[in-house]
Length: 231
Image 1 (cartoon, one colour):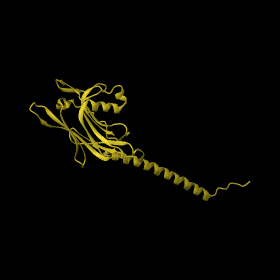
Image 2 (spheres, one colour):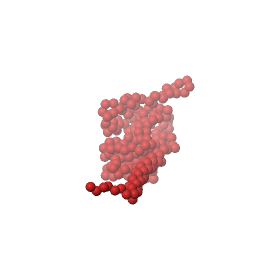
Image 3 (cartoon, helix red, strand yellow):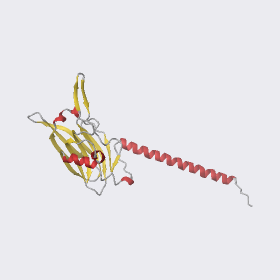
């Protein structure tokens, strides 16, 4: 029977192979960490990182704005579809029953029971700016509000003007209203991409100031909503 012989050279080769394996493993682990950090830094700067496996989905992230009543989002809409930016101003339904389970039915109900505007949007990656501002006061001291949307570098893409009496008191505006936050989110193409919902708070005057109470999510409330819908 032949005897197994393990020479010093074989030992050196084995140790070298093990060392290279450990080095490759560490490099891969460090690369994965760096890639994750790069994605995080891009998101913190308001950039999107769309993986190839999710290129058929809509993606969005909120971008900081220094203007009052202005919201900014970086959005990616995949090719092969037509899109519409939807704005509904009026009575927003509470999220009960099928509305709480099916976003498409919820936003369809907003479209039916509110005023607003629907504008065509092209696919691609862009920054959407949505701004709400008072534009004039008529003879009856009613403030007219302008709801404006545009893609950075492309000018105005849609504008809707209306008197919305409850909005004259901005304390009644819901404070936590953005549906897309500073972390990138993906959305299936057959579902709405909900960007923003503002619902009317109940404002109560107190001796030392005021308090604002948000309406329960399952109850109807005055407000406005902004979302993107694939056709």
